[in-house]
Structure formats: structure tokens, C-alpha cells
Length: 176
Image (cartoon, rainbow, N blue to C red; front, side, top):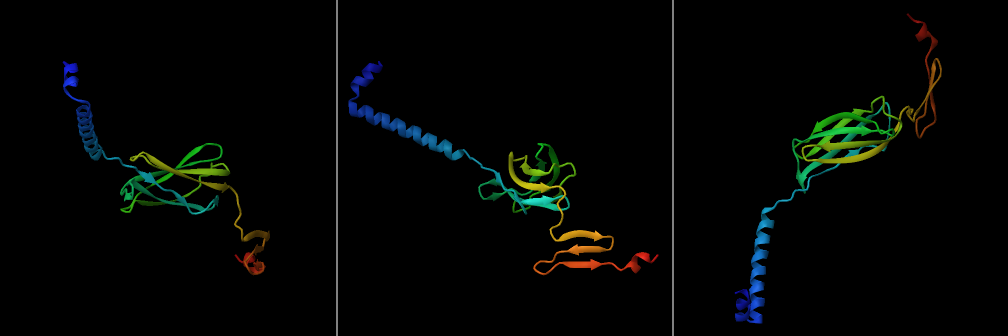
């Protein structure tokens, strides 16, 4: 019976019938694709500096987007550090504002090994994360302070001027 159908239809009629079937399938595909929504969540992570020492706060900021150019308000962002010895440290979390932005400040934990440190910000609800790295100098000294020269003298460099030496009078230590 199928052979009879092909014989009755001519060559150009078969091509026209196939074209109609393809157009119906294409219309159905476009209808289904129009109903399918694809979201692309993303996030950013920005460090204030590239190097931190033990006495400094690490300031982190960023933004979370639930879709392209659509801020994710009220999302929790968790921060974790991974040091050069591959040890992980949870350092806190922050909530995103209406604009999707978050800010967090923390001190580097005492157990973090000196060297390269990776900061990972994660928004678990959206299944996304962002990373940034900095160098951790565990016992770096402030660049302007030379330190105590003696029990009563401290030297400080003041750029662009010359070094300044501060002395403490003996009398102030002798007073009770």
C-alpha cells in the first residue's frame, strides 16, 4: 500500500510533502525552544590587594547574578581560604544586597601557611563559585616602621622626607 502511495504521487509532490513535514517539525521545535528557559548564574570576586600580612584585614567584594544582568538579591556567599599547603579555612559569609553585591572583611587565620592563598566565594543556592589569589606574608613588617633601635628610640621612615627618630625622655619611664 505504501508503494501505491508513492506511485500515485509524482516526484515533485513527494518533495513538497517532505517540505511540509519539515516545516511542521521546525515550527514544533521552535515552540518547544521558546518555552525552554536557560539561566546562566555567575558571580565575581575582587580582592583589594595582591599581598597581605598577618596584621591586615582582607577586604573582599563581588556580585552574584542569577542570570545575565539580573542581580541575585538575598543570596548567601560563603568564603573559604586554601593556603599553600592545601589546607582549607572557612572565614565567613555575607548576604547579597538588592543589587546582588556583597562585601566581607576578615583576618587571615593564624594557621594559614605563608605563600599563595586562594580565596573561594561560593553561592551554594545557585551552584556557582569564584576564586582569586593573594600572597600571604605571615610576619611582614609595616614598610614605614624600622622598629625600636633601643629601649627609648623608635625610627620611622616618612616618604618623601628623611627618616624621623622619636625619643622618649628618661623621666617619663621613671615616674610612678
